[in-house]
Image (cartoon, rainbow, N blue to C red; front, side, top):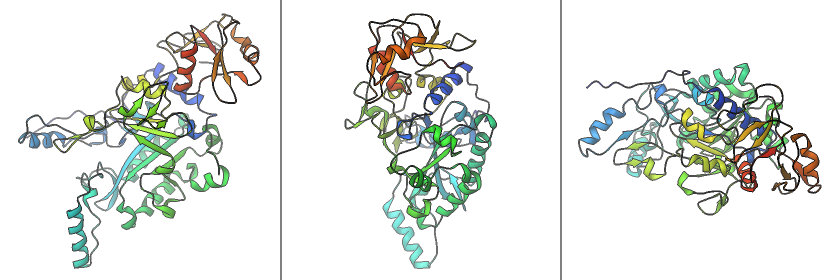
Length: 432
């Protein structure tokens, strides 16, 4: 049976100049923000992408399951586009599914399957014949020796981040890895791959302990230190990974998109409140394995309807399945469509009645967005209307703790918009 599959060639996805500029603006605003307040758009199962031949077998598998139930589907590839294209779409939080298969650490969509009796049978074989079998039910999903290795994936990543125009980009890479890698003595291979490609630019536990023991660095501090990558792992391998990798459980909590209560509540699973210095990662899942697993109905998929609410609550890491420029559009909380419209010189910026940014003549009279530097709350001046240049004076008039300021994330932008009655100046006037 012949089946044709369309695959997007890596590096060919077009991102509009408006979207690219808006994403760059949002990253730039985070430069003075510690890690706990970052908002880094990302992708889920990032390297399980059709662009690298993952999921090509799904049509064959679908025909098989439909012999039993004609309504069943198989949808394997979480992503359509290569990592470089995802980077160009603004993804900076990347999940790498790594497993030991066919003599290499490879990118496989495996794990999550624990077949007790199969694993016990393998262990009995190991004991009986005194051999090593580096395979268990967690490896199910690794089908082909042609699946990309971790080394190949790191080479692809390094090619992008080594470009001069990307020299100030900061990433978080998360390993969704296999518990048995430690028992099989493969953790050191991960460390060696990191050492080879990224040793000089990784911010790891030793730097955290020695330089930021009780806090986390800002994005600007990392860039100044030339430490642009943070690695974290789902499995805590203890001292074996200490040099380069943080355990995930010490960084953030994870949720599905359906658990969010929208702004201003901004809670996940009713108890976890976002934007309080406690990091959160929300991920959707589009994978379907016939009758065995249905990601969209099990955990939900992040959609154009749900994504803006995640941004408004400053979920730190919204990680998309099927990331695309069209979907990333809904992560923009700064520039409105067609903005900035002033293309020469300094740009004075106001939040418009839609809650989005637009440029305006700096001599126009608008109220101002003022941040309380003690508790980070916001006030909008109501009695005094003035041109943009008077923002500092007007905000200081509210009290010594108030400064003319700019939102650094979607939560703050939404807070200002909810207080404003119309156009309101923000302290942003960088060139476009």
